[in-house]
Image (cartoon, rainbow, N blue to C red; front, side, top):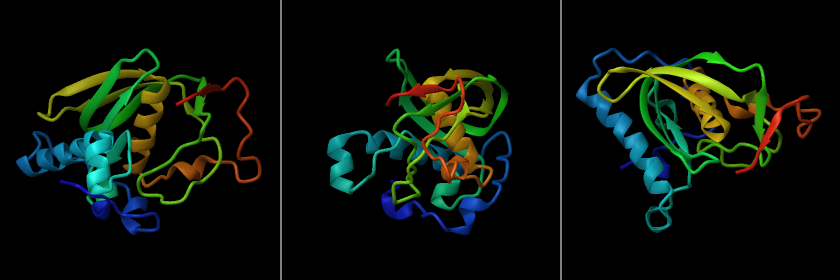
Length: 184
């Protein structure tokens, strides 16, 4: 079971590296790592388990955050229509996106960043992702709103980018023209 001790913190060199592709079909070891990422997210959203093990709640986790520089992410989030988006993915990549931008009105956070970094992170409002599922089968997912933002945040981890890289230092709370504010 992954705990907060397993999650590396901002400043660790792995967080700034481009992760390696996972060879398909995935090895048992890679499947176990991916399952453990998903398990952390599920456990972190359960108040009883989170409290017992001191887990910070999250909606996504990428392998580089546990010092495994491979392209794998887990996301477990509910959208504005109460639809669950729960995925364990190898080699996710954004294949298309909207021109329109969106941002979380409360700002973004990260399990690898202990302090609050205020400001808006502008991302694509809608994205299409291609990836391999836990068994290695290629899938295509269309996302918007909070799930789209969560996916972009986790995919950024696979490319050595952090959410605060996108915050305008001079005007952190200035929304882009026509950008959609998403409340969490």
